[in-house]
Image (tube, rainbow, N blue to C red):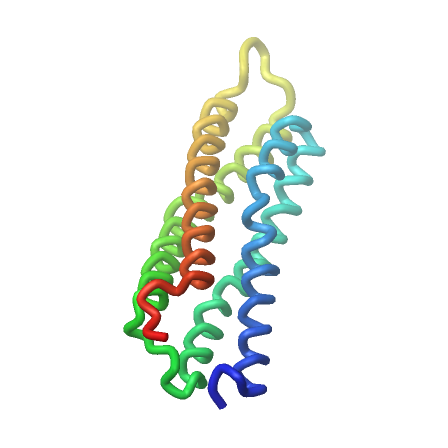
Length: 169
């Protein structure tokens, strides 16, 4: 086995694919949000619902990333250790990211979709913006800030994977 073995390389391929297919769509969520806001109405809701569906699919692959990472360490024949800085820091940052995703992003996204549906079903407002708009603006800012933090965490984790600080080689 080890890093030059076929099993290690197959797991590494799956690990990288899970990162690309899992995180790739999530990195672009802000663009979908901007397009949904720009179109509003049925078109905006359709964009939001499609993005929500794709994000839920991508999320499954995001959960596979650390599992595959653990398997990579286990089949490395001791050449990679969990105690190495780049491994442990990556896990800590990943857990923080999952916390932000579950604590901020998912509930805010679901609420935003619910408000969009309410707004569409209630029809035009008589005088002034509907009350849902103010909450949607706040949620949009919250989602934008959370998305920036998650994207930054992802860049740092990828940097750790590339430069591997603390690697004893």
